[in-house]
Length: 271
Image 1: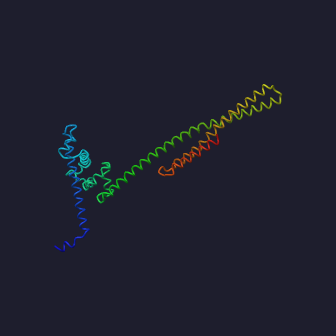
Image 2: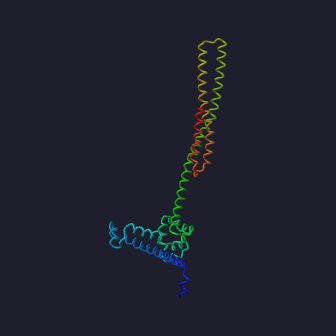
Image 3: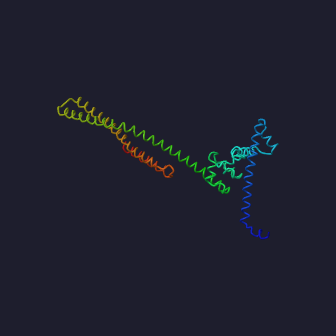
């Protein structure tokens, strides 16, 4: 007997304690689920408005404690029912302790079992499990933010593309208009030269000069529009850059601002 006692070590004792703790945790979860089952049943029988009073007088539970126990039954009850444990999919649930089950309420039911298996929850400490759940939530939030950024960028891409295509449609017409006005000015200038050499009336010369000036003004307007439409090329380049921007890159926002600022500067210089 003395030999058996001397062979025991702190490591063996720690393993025994942890084993008892695990068993206790699982028993506590099962007991909590069964209490939650009965609380759910009782609540359906108690008159409306008397639930809190019944809890206090009959079982000495606060409503928050009762809600937690009923939630445990709702989330785990079916999978902890005797006879259901043969399912390989729910085996991971039956090995949970009460504390683990509470922490895992933060995982949607349809994802819970896969999370337990993938993260080897059975071998995790409470701290490690909380951290794993936190990291999962953080990853989901980052994914959602990334998707929102992608959606916003796609909206900008669509808008720029639409503006570029519309400007392209106008460019060919403006080229023709500019060419026509240049020919008109040339013709009017030739008429003016002939009129001056033939000693035409001052009235005719003034009229021709007015026509030339009006044509020049119109030509200038067409050229401004043409230059503006040529900026469609700049939009196209900006579009290419925009589609390359990595939304998760912290420098993406500043790079986009720089591209837009450069484009605005080019527009201001040309117009």
